[in-house]
Length: 177
Ligand SMILES: [Zn+2]
Image (cartoon, rainbow, N blue to C red; front, side):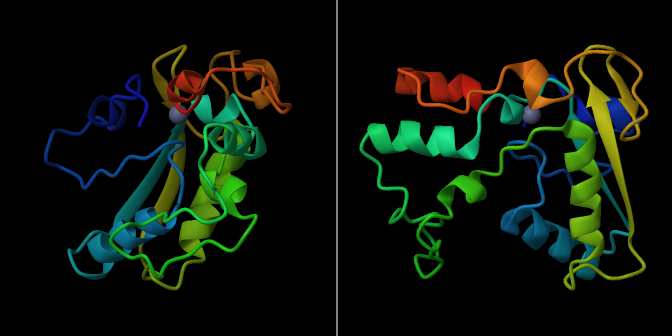
């Protein structure tokens, strides 16, 4: 969902050429699978491209840290409804931090997202699936591990906050982009 990732420009396509779904981190969440399943199974889509990006806010804090910030603001992350339209969908206790899905290495996470889609029984086997990384620093698209520039690609470089800090809740907006 990062505003620095111009999807059409990155892929050299025009507006209306692709179904584009964006989320924090560019991750294969249940909702991403839902959209990918619909577009590939029912709308004729034959190719899926995952695009992650460098300097991603999802590398700036751990899930546990974010959960703690939410808990400190009075949100019970073990009971909260994650899909208001489907209250039956409950996260087991202690899973919320994992559900946020922060990560520590953009090359690794991109490769993993492609694997997750390839292994999903909801995506037809003949659908071609690629992963690319948008380098914010060079404004270029590259394959995972084929670095064009030499800037932020890991949580270490992003200064991940793993421990409790006396941050204001308002910081959350910038932590998750
Ligand atoms: Zn991001």
